[in-house]
Image 1: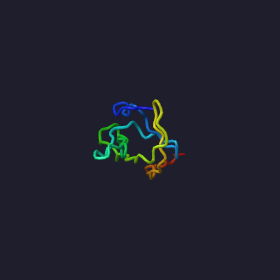
Image 2: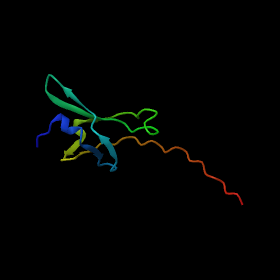
Image 3: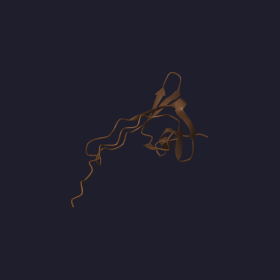
Image 4: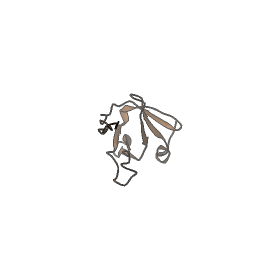
Length: 94
C-alpha cells in the first residue's frame, strides 16, 4: 500500500491498548539522510473548548504503528492516563 504524507493527515490514530482515539496525524518526523519516517505526531486534546490551548502532543515512534488502513492508523503504545479532576459531591438538603 502506498500513501502520501498529505493522506496521513486525514487518518485517525487509535491506540489498541485501551481503544482510545488520539486524534488525527498533525505532523511527520523524517530522517533525511536515510529517507525514512521516524515518527508521527498527533496534536494533543483541546482544553476548555480550545480557549486555553492544547494539551501535550502525542509522539508516536514508527515502531509502535501496527497497521495503517484506509482511514485509521492502529498503534500499540501505552500512554500515562491523567486522573480525572476531583468532583465535589453535592450535599442533599432535607
